[in-house]
Image (cartoon, rainbow, N blue to C red; front, side):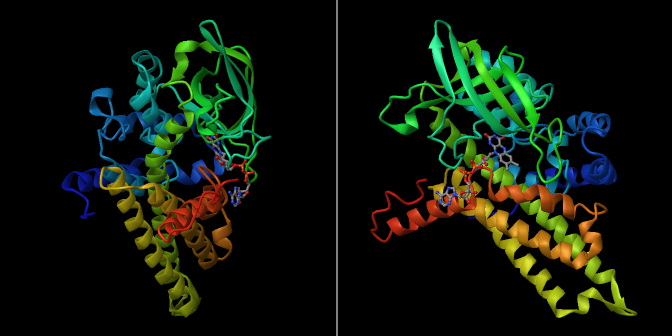
Amino acid sequence: MDFAPSERAQELCALARTFLDAEVLPHEHSLRNLGFDAMAEQLAATREKARQTGLWSPHMPESLGGAGLTLMEQAQLSEVLGEAIAGHYVFNFQAPDVGNMELLHSHGSAEQQARWLTPLVAGDIRSCFLMTEPDRAGSNPVWMDTTAVREGDEWVIRGHKWFATAADGAAFGICMAVTDPDNPNPYARASMIIVPTDAEGYDLVRNVSVMGHSGSGWASHGEVILDDVRVPAANLIGAPGSGFKLAQARLGPGRIHHASRWIGVCNRALKLMCQRAATRELSPGRPLGTKQAVQQWIAESRAEIEAARLMVLQAAWKIEGHGRFREDVSLIKFFVAGVMQRVLDRAIQAHGALGMSDDTPLAFWYAHERASRIYDGPDEVHKAVVARQVLKRFGMDTKGIGRS
Ligand SMILES: Cc1cc2nc3c(=O)[nH]c(=O)nc-3n(C[C@H](O)[C@H](O)[C@H](O)COP(=O)(O)OP(=O)(O)OC[C@H]3O[C@@H](n4cnc5c(N)ncnc54)[C@H](O)[C@@H]3O)c2cc1C
């Protein structure tokens, strides 16, 4: 295994860093304090400039207008972009669009790709992913109430979803719905269907307020009612009943993207902590960094970030064809989210009152990234997946482990 960034990856990361320093970070204070709505024009202008860098939609092939990066290169780039709150967004590399683009690219029909994928890659539209329901445990996704019933040339969808990130302003959502409720295999009961958000019966009820922010646009989490929404039969992605198979395929690379973005957050937090430790004097000539507790925060953070990075790169390397990776994507999901939470907490502590303010990005991330231990599967579910794989190697019958 050689995880050293290729020459190309180094060039791309340097390019991204220069762009962030010049075009994104100078506006970050305003973004945190005024919100995404107030900064919409500025963000749109920055996205226009990002389009010209050759790094636009880095995860998509060049033939579609993307930069055509390998997963490993995406992880390395994502770490750099993660240092800025809007880093991924300005390069059209933001969740949930990334996962939806990958899904449509690998499994969408030619018609679906022309209608939805092409404008998504171009950044002309946004999308959302409609899976979690308020009345059913999201960590047991096979237990779902939303149904899609075939009537002639249409699917009629009825259900209630929430926490659909970026539903506000999205042109379409990819909706997970039960299409074959009687299938004896619970993992073959649901399908993914493209739902245009202007379809009759599609109602974005509200943006759910999260940690004091109701959010808007891309930075929001919508509650959506689907009241007998009719969409063409051709909007089904892949085969009927393949929803969970597709979800698994969507989540593997998705966890690499999330985890490497979180490492970027950690890098920035550690940088801020070290700058503060070196310059904040507790008494004349005695900076914070002379205190052993602070030195330990720095050393522990360095070690954890390094471990997290190597784990993520190893998982990306395995996904790219070097072995089984199921255990690895669960490992990085809970481990890196935990590292991020601890590093942010230490950095806030080192900053004192300043750490609680919105003068640094630490408080923003501390609030918004708490969700990382819940979305795409809570910690406990991923730990159970890992434990199941490990215990199997010890000959234990692991059938019930990790099931809700
Ligand atoms: C900011 C944010 C963005 C999101 N974006 C999206 C999105 O775009 N689209 C979408 O469809 N969903 C999205 N979600 C929803 C997310 O995927 C779900 O919240 C998640 O799957 C957990 O489901 P739940 O909230 O229903 O929790 P529940 O399933 O009710 O679980 C509650 C808690 O129970 C515990 N638990 C659950 N199962 C087990 C188990 N097997 N063993 C031990 N403990 C367990 C865990 O601690 C868990 O946190 C988002 C969530 C957040 C917070």
